[in-house]
Length: 537
Ligand code: SF4
Ligand code: SF4
Image (tube, rainbow, N blue to C red; front, side, top):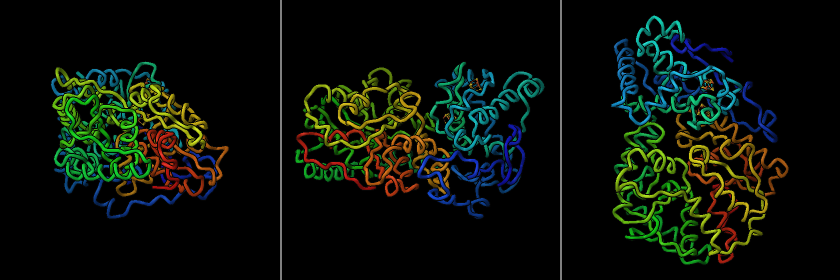
């Protein structure tokens, strides 16, 4: 199938039918029962109509849907916009947030390739050259040295290699910035601290902020909808309150514990912010939080103000302006309510967006303390206020580490201490903790399924997680043995759900997925047994 490695960096500028292919024969084989020819669904080829309409010459999929140019003027306009955006990206006034690490990463790379072996996408694709963390960075590095450094036109190309800047280069680079999960596993291994994940992020930012190009799922249907209606799910305040009321009723019926979610309670200790996707797709998760908080006697509230009932902040992945708008709204509502702190529910990107990244904009009285639910839940468990019966959770459980929460924030142990206490058959994936692998849905991919992108994220970016899950349960693969992948992050949970469905892992292996709080309520002595339903949803 098509062109084989190696693909040189400068080839990105060459107008050709396709730069690279995802060859299913080159993908790293999966463990049993997916080691044979059966089990992996057919990769849907891009339609001719899609190829005609959008840029589709990078690999065998499309993430961004960049319209193909109608004429030379349109081609040149894209390149011009890119160059002027790049100028802003490398200026202090326009990129005070990330300029320093970006320049350090641009100017310092020993080309040792340590980062390459750390990247699950590069590894599991069978070392497809364009997925090498350095490939994307090298394209930008050559442009940077050629166009932005003094004497670059002569010395830059000699020192760093030449590159042509044309429509193909820019359009492919846009797509290529969405073949990275921004998991930063590569950055963690770099001996000199260069960050290829940051480079992919900064490219996305340039494309969105300066050129108005971003995947619809993240921008129009994500950040824009959230700021306008209140949530990227489309729920307005009335709908969210209605939904939570139904969830409270369900929880009361299922557990026998009376639950009533408090709204807009001034002076509460905690403002709890969920990823609103949970309310729609996994109501048992916010429901379980309510059961636990009620039973533990926590002073808490949710907010019914637009944006403040949805922890989603997709700007983290592609646009600093969008990120700041959402983060400021979250903090303003917390300030208005006078809560002691904000607690972030099971959502990794919401954790990182509102804490370590929003630190740059939440200053003064907007600097409300923010805490991970992992810590809050561990405090509840260790306080002894709730009695647990671990024998109700006596089935194999493994833990997925959300990159944003674990590698990028260092929240490693609280969730493990809980699981060790309430799940007798808890076992780690290998590797785990800060060395974990991304689920393959990171940086927004979990909500992106246009064209055949779902095939790419199930077969390429999600392949390492598949391998890890199967290995964690390898001695109990019999589908009659129920097994649970605990993923305390909404985005990761969506990707793991999609992997289970794509590979039919529930039917074939008896694997389901869910959050941490569901496991807690499942074994609460005061709750009716059977909270976790062994079915796919
Ligand atoms: S590990 Fe660091 S120095 Fe080595 S190639 Fe990767 S980015 Fe460059
Ligand atoms: S950030 Fe993650 S997905 Fe992106 S290049 Fe690095 S290791 Fe690969």
